[in-house]
Image (cartoon, rainbow, N blue to C red; front, side, top):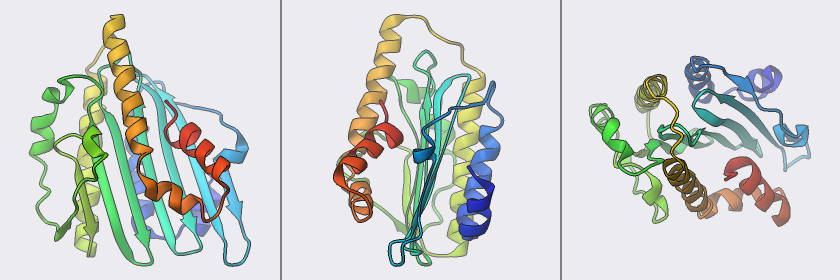
Length: 240
C-alpha cells in the first residue's frame, strides 16, 4: 500500500492505528510475499470535484494463507472504510479473519471483527479463547444481518461512540489476530482431499454470503458502473 496515500490523504488516526496493527500481525506470518495485481485495481483514484475517491488494495500470501487482503478507501472526503480478510490456504485448518470498519465524518457506524470457521467443528479449537476476550464495554452493539450465518458465535459488531470504545475495539482486533497467528503457527497442512474440498466449500460460501451485503455495492455504484462494481466485488473483495 503506497505510503504517500496513507500518509498524506488518509489522516484519520484511528484507521491508521488499526492499519498499522494489522500490518504488524501480518508481518509475523511465515513466508510472507506480495501478490501482484493489476495496478488499475491496486490504486484507484479520482480527484473530480464532488466525486473524489481513492481505493488502495494490498495483497499478500503466506504459509497457511492463500490471500491476505487489506483495502483502505475514502469517498467524497466523508466516508472512510477499512476492509480486511485473510483467507487460509484450504490445505490448512485455519479460520478466516475478517474485519471491517466504516466511518462517516466522525462517527464509526460499523466495526466488525471475527474468526469465521472454514471447516466443520473448527471453532472448537479457538472458541474458548475468543469467549474470554472482554467485549462488554460498548453501548451500541449491532445485530448480525440475515446473511451473516458465516460468522462465528464470537463475532463482534458494534457502532463506536467514543474514543474509549475505539481503543477497546483495537484491543479486540489485536486479540483476534494474536489467536489467528498462534493457530497458524501450530497447524500442519492436510492432504486429505475431502478435508480440502470442505474448506474450499466453506470459503466459497463465505464469499457468496458476503456478496449479499448490498451496502457494499450501493456505495460503489455511486462512483462506478455496474459491471465494474460486480467485477470488483467478485475479483478483488471476494474472489472464490
